[in-house]
Length: 246
Length: 272
Image 1 (cartoon, chains in turn purple, cyan):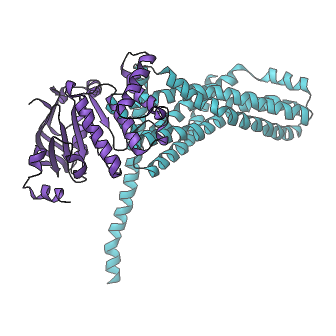
Image 2: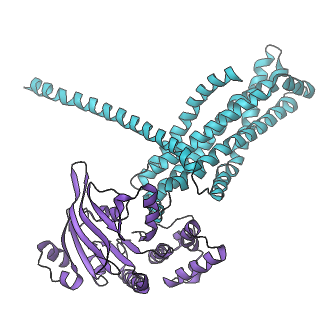
Image 3: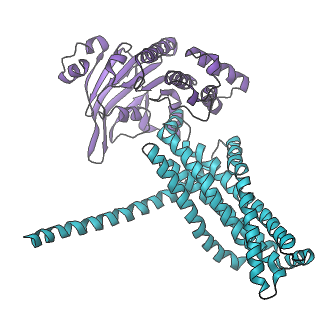
């Protein structure tokens, strides 16, 4: 199996505090991997390393066959265009409408003309199940679920190879949670041809296990379990069992 | 017994005072260093493509056009008040015809750039810090970085350039309206002869007076926008952090205008 992300002996310390402790694991290309863990386990720090926003204290990360330590600031910024990210609260630009949010990366990084941007933007918004009436609304006029949809459409605009989801279902009602999960699953399936890899960072075990192919469990900076989802559910690790039985 | 407890506590108390004073000094020096680095980096960001002209014009509209009314209002009342004060002062020594040039010189050299600077620091400086700070706490800046957009360049450059261009223009408007107010009060209310008013004005006002004000405004605009954007990027936490950042942007913006004004004046009076 081909790996999208390879984490090799990754350690990150902030002063005396070790946040990630000699991590070794791979994320399989074209699959949905969920990284579970309690708050403060180091999930967000790991995600920032994958994005190249933080540098490891020691060890390395190979993402899409590129050793991130070989890239300089500009190189890293360009490399990040391989990623799409859905933030916890969508992080939409609040001065822009839904369409303008989706058009933003297209205007910044492609040579498409306005007609092509409009066409692609509308297609993306439609693909995540948004109705045309909400295309010209500001984020403040949208519900939480709709904002997530726009955030996802924006993240998909540049056809990323890796999609990151930061706590995608936190704070959502059960129906919207289900909708977001289906959206993640559908998005990954729809982009199977390009091998879109989805990485979900979450502590919402019930919501994310339904759609994941692999699950990694992070605790105090260490991966204590990393298996396909059906094997993960049978894990004998006491901490994982406690988490699953919550 | 009590005495021994008091003496045991004393070093701790002193230690705390020294510690808090030390951390205050270190934090301030670090903050100053960070701000200096941010300002230096601005020059690099501003010459590095892409050049976002539309964003610059949007900011120019926000800082400039939307401040015009308040600048005109302040200018008119400043000019009118100054005319009154100068008239009654100069009348005592029979020099009331000098009201025009005195008010005009005060406005051109000092009042227009400083008052416009204070207005823009309060209005646009605060808005810059609040906008960028809100973007930071709602992860919008992270979203820009993840997309591969240099958030500092995207947000800071248009604002700083627009501030630097807008303030001299607003200062000219302030000065013009202030002079108009002074003229109306001086000639129509206080009865100064119109011909004398303009004759003294043309005799005593020079282009250098206007240049001094415009040069000051140029620096004030740059500094206010740098402080506003820097405090926006420095925001941490939630709504409280945004409030704190906005407050710091206004306070430091206003103080810096007054301090820089002193140094610029002492320099410019020698060369202009």
